Length: 195
View: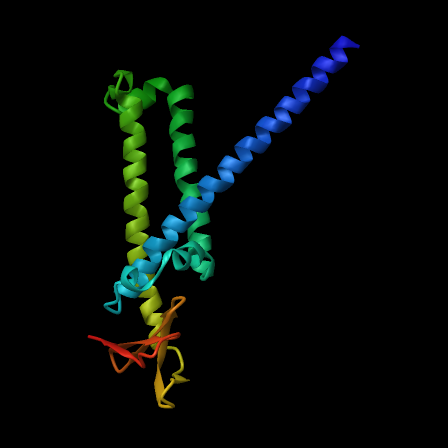
């Protein structure tokens, strides 16, 4: 009877631990997704000379990763690839220590090597995100130029035409003949020209 209670207690503890770890994993994954979305949005709008941080608020960045399927797919791949590389590195460290030591010039035996290894992987991950965000911005700009022209009737009943770059909660960005126009959605200001 006592053994059954012990097993039941261990199962409950294991389930509670899994739930706590899963919640942490979801939170960290969402923060990572938002960070990647911010980098991608920055590069997307900077291709048109727009500093999106001047026009967007926090909510725009919290939903940014979910506005484009490319950002979601890239985020998933961006977490799987470095994780797999780190696991492969750990595998070689554990099961092929002599080869691993030779490849790392014997530094793996130093006390600071693990911190160095983690910082290198982190730096490469950040560099990879920034480089990929830049490529995404160029890809997005090419897609915008192939879009059909959009017409928007503004508050003074004039029609603004251009290709839709994107929008935030308060502003719509249009490209008209290599010029960018920012049209406020909830304002008495009719339009803003960005050169």
